[in-house]
Image (cartoon, rainbow, N blue to C red; front, side, top):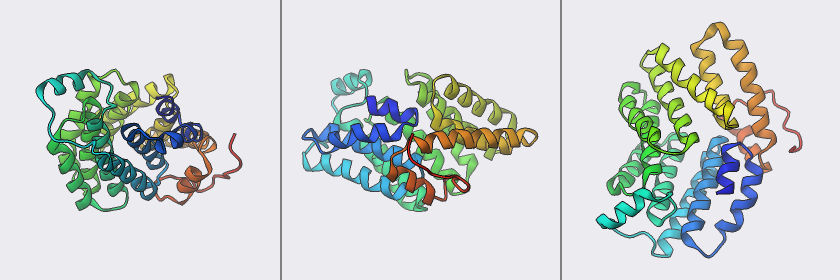
Length: 268
């Protein structure tokens, strides 16, 4: 949980130092959750191929331990609804949704759709999975050039996030919905949603959500584009300075992270 919090702040090096011992530990569910958490951090730095290996590792740990079972009983479903998303079913959903997101970043949209379908068929990953499922479904459609088809899952994720206690998930759901709305031409609502994400991320120190929010706003608000891009550069610099060497190398090599012009010196 400490690593999740650190990752939300963009302190990826500190998070990785906590996650690796859990990944190599004996508890398969915690190992899987740690692997998918680190995968998410790699993905946030544009390292989709590296994230894919970690998500696959998490799924393999669950499978080898026999921790992936069939449908939950009604009682189990009720208990899971009140849980914090740290059981085997939640870990499985994390891994499958992570693999789908990795596939999107690698341009494998058919694979992403298949993985999303496998995860959605169980539908028992808990409330966090419900939110992330909507994100991934929306991202698949955006990547395929179908922003109108992305709107429904983005709104489902947004509504589920509003019912959750997770500030970061609510903020990111604003960002996802805002990007989708921009894609369908609703500029005003897109600006409001993404500005909402930015304000929350500033208030709560969620630095990794700041720079993409500002980059999108630079396109939506051309009269303030220079200011948005300058601030995005400062935010991204902060993230890169707090990433471990592997994470920073992934960001530097990624087409998804605008690192050109950055001097990636020692961590600080």
